[in-house]
Length: 90
Image (cartoon, rainbow, N blue to C red):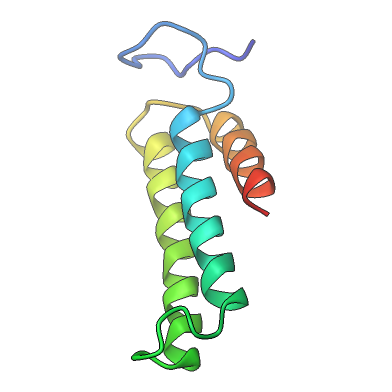
């Protein structure tokens, strides 16, 4: 199993990042729903709905990146977690 970076608060193995898995699942599932269901938010209109979907994915990527930046996980741990969550969402 892949160890966490030096100085991480937790000592347990961090592969894959469960936070990245959850964040990617939620953001990709939400974005896919907004893209697929064209009347999910009729008051916004479909173009703005697509923009919201993009923002959801970008937010999920950014929050996952923070796990690496703050030293809780290594990049491979977050990448594997993100891939696992997003593939499950689709």
